[in-house]
Length: 142
Image (cartoon, rainbow, N blue to C red):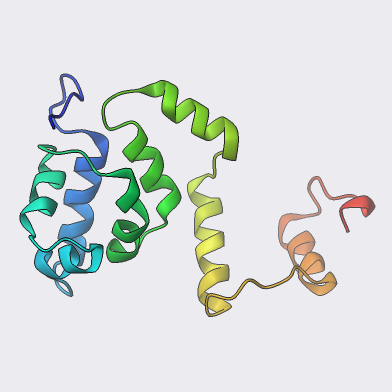
């Protein structure tokens, strides 16, 4: 498999993987990351982060878990690693797109709820309304 990302050389996902693996290097070796993903050879991770091989879509969730990132944006990057914008556009049309700030809020909710799926209570809604100034909120949304 080859990288067809155009003039810049490395695909966006290869750049992301390279950066994230470097950020985790003080805690995890590339071999540790490869094992967490389910690869027996850490050379596969080297090839993905250099852009010499594509990130397999069926491994995106395990890669995200090993890299301690959200799988959704990683999946979008994986869809476009060959420059096929049609796949990315179709995916985003199906599931929408989160901003970096929204992803940070979701991550905080998951962290503070210990990974549970907390129900949005009346109190939680009031807190959100107070935080965001009631922007866009209506009685029907309660």
